[in-house]
Length: 88
Image (cartoon, one colour):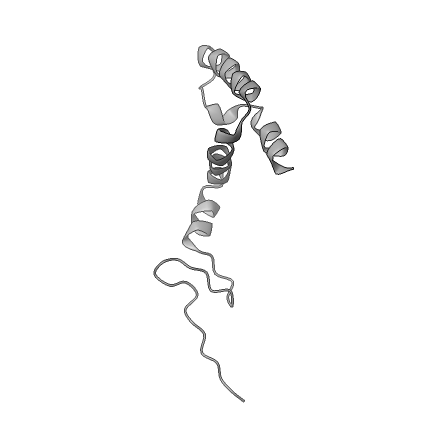
């Protein structure tokens, strides 16, 4: 029977060894901070928004800033619609 030598699960760069079930540094960070995925999606889709979507975000942000609720543009309800539009 031939023995095979497996490389370490993750090297110093955090690359994933597909022969094991270990996570990369990025996967570990996302597991600790799941909100990162939402922020990454916003960063990627924001430049692809239409003028109407930008106007809707701006109008929502102006109202949200003046409300008693802490303002966070990532809470805009329209992000999911923008993501759905770009997914097709």
